[in-house]
Length: 96
Image (cartoon, rainbow, N blue to C red; front, top):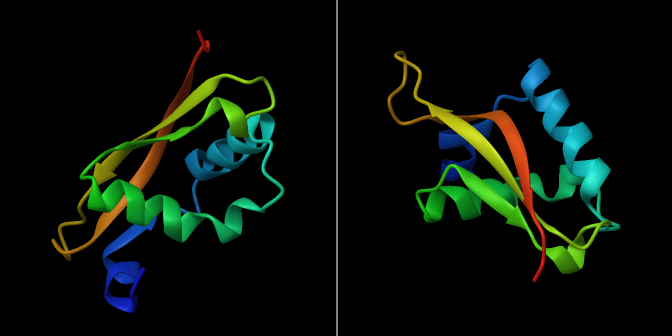
């Protein structure tokens, strides 16, 4: 993600919602990469797809199910160029 996008697209890092996102992600992720190193890629993916969720695929999850992480996208009144992704929950789908 380029520097301009880093300031325009961000997680609500200092909230209990983000804390819950971290807990949920680590609970299901089988990746050996800390979430800290993935956040820019996750934000870039959601921003470029104009989406409010991302999927952790079954082959990368501990329980071999697809996991979807959902976010509410907010734009602060002070700066309409910024989009803040606030975690709202998680769902999974059994692999068929």
